[in-house]
Image (tube, rainbow, N blue to C red; front, side, top):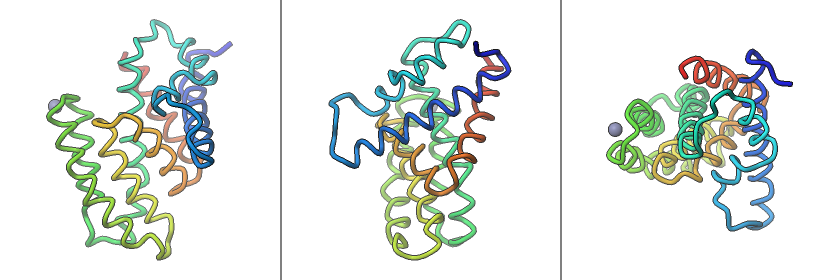
Length: 186
Ligand SMILES: [Zn+2]
């Protein structure tokens, strides 16, 4: 039985594990026609975790929660990018645009965030083969996070990217902080 105190941790581990599993499967070729963001929410692990949340909100609301989680995680790892490339600010701008959507989740902000994706991805790809690899992943993750409000499946790419930039344990710990705040605010 999941208690209220352990719920954020259970959710965090379930979501990150489900995202990594889906991305692994995807690498061997698309296995399903279900969009990845839907697939995370319908994975057995995540479904079980969400079912424990009192008054669990509807699927659309959870989709938005997952996208806000992706933005939160991208912010958590972006320092790896800024430390390595302080003068290349496109990934930071991308996260700021995604955060503007998180604060006001409307079409306009989703579109504005998506418009920053290409620039951030370009800067990340320009250093893709240059160490530190974590920095490139962090920059790429910012680009995915900015695309996620508009294109939901990028949520999963961003969660996976954060795990490549930082260690999965750290990403799960960050996700737990996100869900703690999220469940408190409900
Ligand atoms: Zn808005």
